[in-house]
Length: 144
Image 1: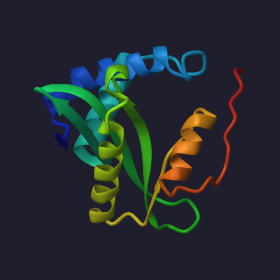
Image 2: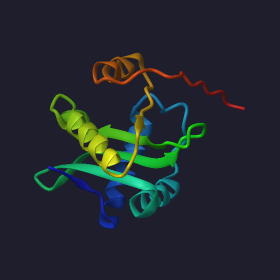
Image 3: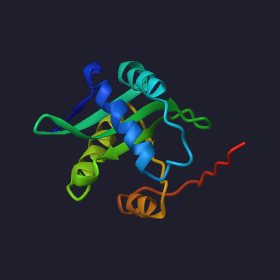
């Protein structure tokens, strides 16, 4: 089951966000600040976008969060993924795809013309391509 996150889901969202940062490709690139993640989750849930959660037996097993913004150049309403995370033991199921499709539907219903995702690995980029997404740029980061 997929539903929109509520304020009561924020502690689990923060927990999953921390886990994603510590275990995934961002572990040496992005610091984990649970207080900031908590505020971001509230901002997204309450006004800036949506957080969709996947549940199994009442337990949150995955989430996809996105913000809505006017594109910098075209001003077209765009949905931008903030976080897409599914617990490792559920990654062989269709949970991730169900979250993506639900997010696309919701973004479209909210008026978005495009949806953007980040691809931290070549494997993720290939998955997006299979789902009909086109690469538009590659970003780089350097510690200063």
